[in-house]
Amino acid sequence: MSHTTRRLRYVVKRLLQAVPIIFAILVMNFFLLQLAEGDAVDVLAGEAGSATPEYMAELRAKFGLDQPLPVQLARYLWNVVQFDLGYSFRHEMPVSELIFDRMVPTLLLMISTITLAVGFGILLGLIAATGLNTWRDTAISIFALITYATPLFWVGLMLIVVFSLNLGWFPTSGMENLTAFYEGWDRVWDIARHLVLPTITLSLFYLALYTRLMRASMLEQYGQDYVTTARAKGVTERRIVFVHVLRNALLPVVTMAGVQVGALIGGSVIVESVFAWPGLGMLAFEALFARDLNLLLGIFLLSALLVVAVNLVVDIIYSTLDPRIEVA
Amino acid sequence: MGEFWHRFARNRQALFGLGILGCVILLAAIAPLVYPADPFSLAGQSMSPPGENGFLLGSDSLGRDVAAGIAHGAKTSLMIGLVATLVAVLIGVIMGALAGYYGGWIDDLLMRTTEMFQTIPSFVFAILLVAIMKPSIESVVIAIAVVSWPAVARLVRGEFLSLRNREFVQACHTVGMSDIRIMLGEILPNCLSPIIVIGSLMVATAILIESGLAFLGLGDPNVMSWGFQIGAGRTLLRSAWWVCTFPGIAILLTVLAINLVGEGLNDALNPRLRERAG
Image 1: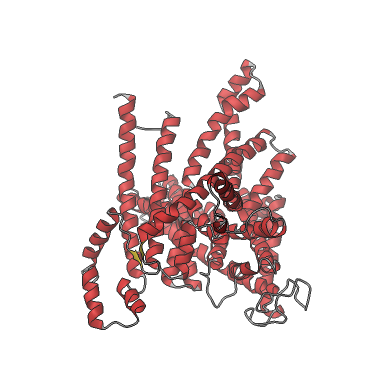
Image 2: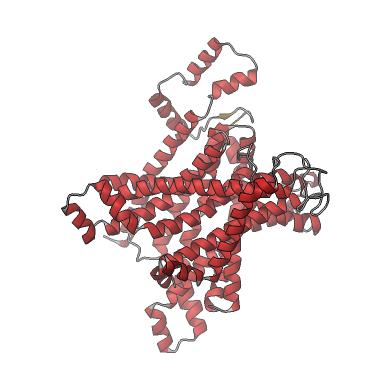
């Protein structure tokens, strides 16, 4: 069997493995929705002010809420397949539309965070590993230890106090200055300035994580036989680090970046609500306040699916980067 | 025990962590004595800076004492962290033990479930659970436990898998011991140390999750907590920085201390693991 077909079969296999997980998440979502007090009709009736029991029963029949659970579940699954995540009565919009509107700011925040965290994490881990047990290594370890223990929302608030309120370098909240009507590059620059503090806040935790991982990964590679061989050949230490060890040490860090996406989404709820960044996290925060569970469940579902998708992509990339990974 | 303490005490970081943790526990214990009043009650001039009007760490816009809140919040954080972790460890041990001991389809089913729970973004899931159950101490504990157990289950499964075919277990089978007795009485005691280590580190994570939930307004409305203090103080950032700052330092120190103690436990209980980890 050729290499390409094997790879293709692996991809298909991984896709099929994801199906039961997605199905289970959907079913769980459905039951969580059932657990929530009151259904859509209660909300509608509440909004309308007064509704007779007959009218409510009629509405329930119209939405299919009087059907037995399995029928409702099937209906729910069918709706989700069609990207129909229900209706948000607070926003008077379909949930899916609301979510897609807020997707771009969140993706922007996440991409800049991952770039910063992975980039600096690799750099710091490299510095720590090459200067093992020197003051640089110790300082980086202490930094990682403290960062691990700091609540993200608190870091965000402290950064606002220092850099926005006292120094006035960055804006306190939002994604852009809407009253200024910037266009073109001015607008990009404005958004970039708003992006700085949320990105730093969200990346700190992952920065610590990637630093530790990179350090451990570098040290593991140092112990390998090929390093000894390279040394014996007389390859310079610098070349060993940058050409041989670094390349191999990067692999686990790349995988981790994918695995951490779920945590990143959780962190973005916190960070976005601190900085009023108008993304999905902020939407979740608003939904919490308005007790808009339909919307909250939609966001939850989407983020769970996103994690499944990212893990899938990372696995496939990983298997391409490292042909030793079992693909058969 | 003596040897264990000797190994633990050799680690200065762990001792430092234990010291801070001791202070936090002491603070939680003496809070009702030092600040007998309800921490939600008005205690004097509002918006007092630290050190003024008799407020050690200042007061917020409603005249609540920040220091009293931190003292009472210590109990909340420690208790929720501990109870949620115990529940999570209990679930994880049951799932992991059954999966590792029996293998086969039970293992498949339980591990697929574990995988699903690991895939779900845990903090968003915790938010959702508390929002559905209505914020209270119980719902926060349940939510944290539900998102935390998968790591324990995987760990315990691995341990059970590697121990279930050892000679001492086979000997137990031969003398006709029941499965439950073998699992609880023979195998479990042999994997206690990694469970203790992961559990201690989970307490730290649980406290962080709790503070995040309380910050978003999902804490028990009748119980003072550090996250709530920060959430309530964030609108005062411009005029009263101290309301947010001090509870955050309390969280940072507590979580840091627990992490240090957890790593110290790891080094002391699994000396070989440390060597392997380099």
